[in-house]
Length: 504
Image 1 (tube, rainbow, N blue to C red):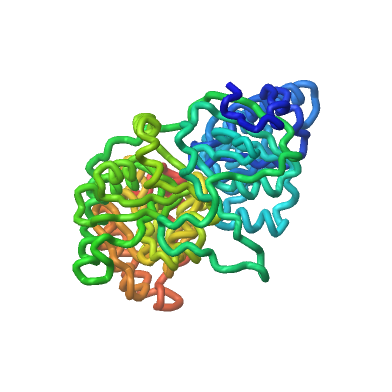
Image 2 (cartoon, rainbow, N blue to C red):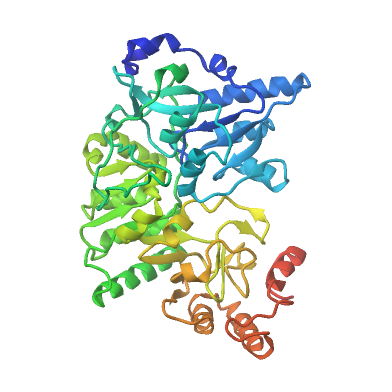
C-alpha cells in the first residue's frame, strides 16, 4: 500500500492505528480533518476511542478537546462521544450521539462561524493545539501532502499542531490530485492583506498541503469510504420550495437585478437545498458558477448538464451514488471543481465581493424575519450555525428556506418570536416555504410581518399569527416591531407541555 507514500524519508513512520492513537494523552486538544462527512480520519479516532474506554475501565479519566472543520462521521465524533471521550467540541457537530451528550450538558460545545475558526486558532484564544489527525490521499516525494475529499481547517491544523498523525486513505481517488487550492497568504492584523481572488474559478495557492516533516509522528494507511448519506427524493414540499426560489431568481434577472447567468450560488446541505440545485438544471440560467461550502449531488447534476461552469467549495457532501459517479469520472470533474480551506471558501469579504446568492435552511423564523438555525425550542442544539452566518450577512441576496411545519404539523416554522436568533432580520432578505416566498427587502418590521404571515405561514397557523400581530399592534410597548412579551414564546411552551403548538 505504500505506493501512496512517495517520500522515502517518511515511510519509516508508517505504523498501525493503535500505536498512533497511543501518542495522544488525556486532556489534550486534538484537531482533525473532516467536513460534512468527507475527508475525516477513520481509523485513529476509533483506536483512540478504544484507548479511552480501556482507561475509563481502569478508573482513569481520559477526555480530549476535539476541533474539526465541521461535522465528520460515526468513526470519529460518534466513536469518541460513545465512550465519553470528548470534553469540548468545536465548531460544528452533526453526530446524533454527540448531540445527545451536548444537550445533556456532558460535552461543552462551542458553536462557531466556520470562517472564524482558523483565525481564532492563529490568534491563540482557543488555546494550544497538541495533535492533528489529518486524512490525505497521498504524500509526494518532496513530502508535500495531497489532500483528500475535504480541506476544511487542515492547513491551520498542520501549521499549529505540535505533532501530526496522517491517515493515507487509498479509498480516496488518486485523481483528486490537482483539484485543491491551498492558499498560504492569510495573516493576522496588522499584516493582513487582500486575498487575490476575484472569480470563483481563480486559483491563488498550491494543490498541496505543507507540513514540517519533523512534526509527523505517525502515518497510518487506510482504505475506508467517507460517510456518504443518501438524499431523499424531492417530495411535493421540496419541489414547491425549489419552484418558488427559481421563480424569484428569474424575476430578479428580468428586472435587471441579477445577470442572466446569476451570481455565484451558495447552498447549504440537505434535501431541500439539493432539490433547489436539481431544479436549476432546467432553469434558464447559463452558465452558472458556485462559491459555496460543499459540493453535493445537485451540483454534480448541474455540472453534468453543462449548466454549472465551475464549483468552488471546501468539501464534498454526496450520496453514495453521487460519490461513485464522482470517483468514476474524477479526471473529467477535476478541472471544474476547486476545494479550498474553509477560511477561504467561507470568507465574508470574498462572499461580499463575489456577490454570492446564499440559500440556507432554518429551524424557525419569526414574523419579522429573525431566523433560528441552531436551537430547537430555544435551548436544544440541533447541529450548529455552520457557515450560514458567513454567507447570509454578506450575500448579494440572502435566502432562507424551510417547510412551513415540522413534526406532522405539530410545530410551525413561522412563529410570533424566534426562541433563539442566529440571523437577525437585517441579514434575512427572503424567506421561502412551500406556501410561498416573502421578499423582505426594503420592508419595515410591520410590513415584513404581513408578508411572512400571508406568504410563508401554513394555513393552520396563519390565523393565529395574524391575530397575534393585530393584538401586538394594540398592546405593545412600542410599535416599531410590535411584541407581546408575555405571549411571544407561548407557542414553544405549549409544544413542550402538550406536544403541539396548536391550541387544544
